[in-house]
View 1: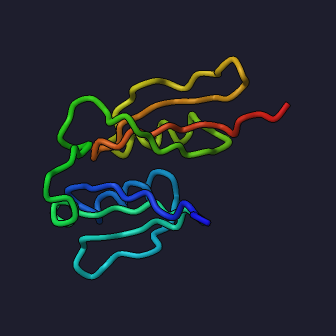
View 2 (view 1 turned 135 degrees about the vertical axis):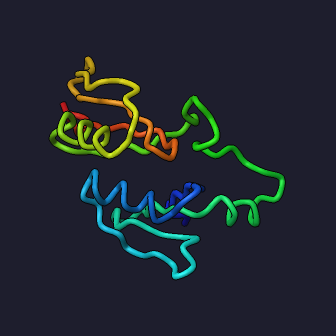
Length: 132
């Protein structure tokens, strides 16, 4: 059996990214290595983690595209589910995120917004998908 365990995002500064998620979404820090090269948030069974670009380069010597190095967001997003999309959308902007799409209600009843974090991570803030 295979279990989805981690999403690791390569960034310039791990500490800064942990602080953004702590301050914006009240997600607690689970771990930060003393080197500062790797850190995790307490996001439940599947871990959201950050590693420095240098660590990424040591793992992937042929290179990779980092969200901080491109104007357009990468084609992958982190979706954060909450009951008050506008509250967290506004908090993200207050903490340095850029609005890509204001909160809107989708035809299936879900409210969704899109932002780019200060380090280039595409974020979806959304309510739970209604069950019918």
